[in-house]
Image (spheres, rainbow, N blue to C red):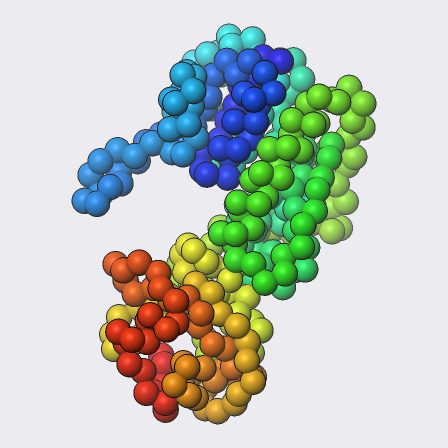
Length: 302
């Protein structure tokens, strides 16, 4: 098929690659515009999809918006059979949705209609869901409201958002290729609006750890926000992120370090950090962290 691919972050890269590997003709790639980055924040940094598309020799377009008639005409002129969207980051106006012969299909990182929106994996982990997955849906004007063509599930278990993102990216890529192969036999299924939930974009204000919450809630916060933005606490005036943790037995005053293994008392129960990261430093396991940061029993973490 003649395909327009639209995506930006790492999550979208496996789907682009899978389309190429399946011998589809990707006539153009749309991605978010390069943004300032690098060590000094001055270098324009291309998205992961943009980088992969360049490696593949594909044309890349990076409009800031698709609302103008000019951009919509340029899109339609590609004469695509279908557009495949994976975490693109721009709203698609109706003329864009209508331009390809078979419309636009989206790979979304949740089992719709649960967790429509920008941060479905984060929200699933933070909410304590036991299962997540990917859904292939036909796009329409609403936010992730279109009819579903296929889905695949995976258990969340004790995994972080970062780990699940990688697995779901690969799962979504395979599911999209299979859906395109059998597109004619897939029957669209409408979403049940009564079951819909919204996955709001993660705000950095959600990242500070509140030790007064139960340990299982703190654990879900840690894993849901790992690796970015990272759940954090204050140690001697500096932020320290916890990227992985475990719930353990223990009790005491909220935020108090209970032993020499950095077990921290929560509102109910306790957690033990397993991977931590100081600002500007690489992540490290607990033993490595404690060798350079002695935290005495009885210390109260803010």
